[in-house]
Amino acid sequence: MCEVIERNRAEAKIEVAIEMLKEKMSVETIARLTKLTVEQITEIGKKNSLI
Image 1: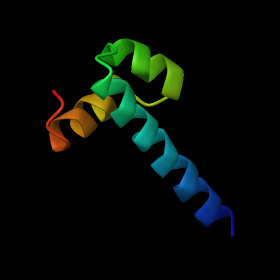
Image 2 (image 1 turned 180 degrees about the vertical axis):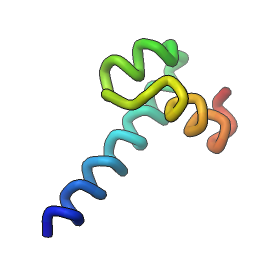
Image 3 (image 1 turned 60 degrees about the vertical axis):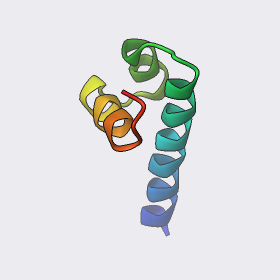
């Protein structure tokens, strides 16, 4: 059960990061607000053709 919750939280962070990238927020700001790393944000952005 905890694994499912953690996975859902991680997916939600990614979705939020994608929306923030669409709004042209800086990678550093997104990382600070989502607690994801700059590297993770960059990877997400590249995978979604946003960076």
